[in-house]
Length: 191
Image (cartoon, rainbow, N blue to C red; front, side, top):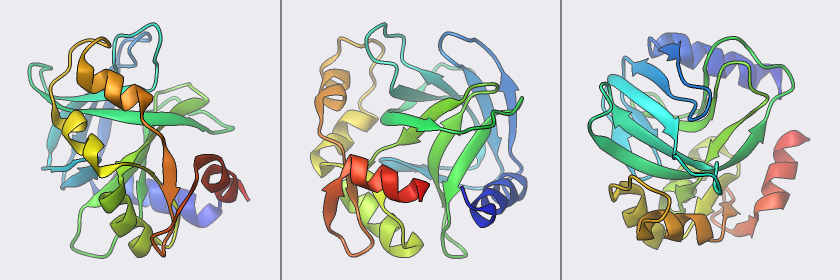
């Protein structure tokens, strides 16, 4: 990862007043506080405290759920793909896509403390196209019809919305709006 991107990630964390607490190793439950709005796939979260955790599933460890501060209200169930970092930290790391001033930062990935692998979020295609245009980078994407599955409350891996997310085709949207293979997009980020 380029020095500029790392600097951006850490600058955004401090600018948003980010704080996190380490929790459960199995579901990676993490409490995060944002001092400003943050875009996630399917919606924008207002400033506040949220719980991020993996869906309780033996078969799919790439579904992230976002709850309110006390875990009683589910805001989103998000498809992710594994994202790798060479040097894990002892703190939670949230990576954001650069955005124009006055617009919410778009959450790109979440890394649990001490883990090399995190979760890179997959956005509905229309949202991915907007982010890709603004950032001049490829953004992981899925069909816009999946947006309803993101915001449908799902408590288990057997629910139709989770099955639909788990089985959807992931591509990437380029800055000019074209779709490319997910692997091609991931490889271009590493170069």
